[in-house]
Image (cartoon, rainbow, N blue to C red; front, side):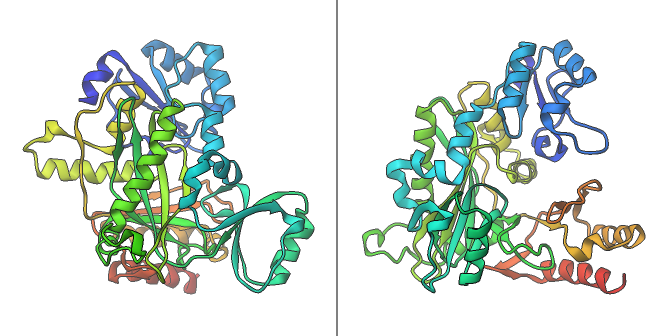
Length: 411
């Protein structure tokens, strides 16, 4: 269905990371992926390059980006290009940690207990908590405070900076990609968010992947513990939260994808909203790849089904999505982020590590120019799973971890 719309409404997806746009196969003159050939370049810089300008103008293409910014909006206005992404200012208001609380208003009831204060005024009473500054990305800007010394260091460094203080909850984090159309709220597949596992990262709050199989296990494990929700499943609660947020975004002109991160308290089984990602979530394209494989295996009724990424593009074109988003029950991806040990590997040892992972027949993407600490370095994708239970690698995941550790030991 999306291909039919693209014949009259060509799209150029401009991105510094091609993987963000690969949810749909490139179609000459209809769907174009415009990126840099080597070193990553910011999206707004790409939009000013002459060859990219010519391609956009030649194809009269609409523009889609992974994450909109005010700079991108200005460039598109100056060139009279039609940028399909929702407003950058609305996205920032919804996504930033403190403004998000104010934007949620009555929906903030779904968050863990929290308060907002200048850093200098925060006290530590011995109870661990989560401290977040307004802007954070994949775990950066988020601190687990469990000692007075940690807090005092932040207070000294950022005394006047507002921070969100949240109750510390332990339990699995799940994520769901949600598509807002002009008339409806559509849900992708809920995945388990792989977070902070060594040796894939040194940051305990860094998001390093998704696992769709183990999410189903977690969601079906029990009912919600709260007496007021004794007949409501965890999945139903997640969809309730997602729909209410989606409706609010829709009322303010949002169309296209956003994502919600959910944590399930392992002590009480209560579902809490952690974050809203007001943009196309990073897991979208691989979810859509898995959906296409599932669709190919079950060709009957394919005209009634759509991938999450296709639903995103269709909604950005302000077309109705009258198909069902394809369900998936398997598949996982995991990121190896830069650690001190990974950055110390010489080129030969690094190439050996990559080749050893490829021998396992996974889809492997290397980001050769990402050399900052905790930046994405290797993306590993599988049609199966890497996780057995919350915070536990299965045999495939352990095999990957062992290959990485062996590369460090032999360096």
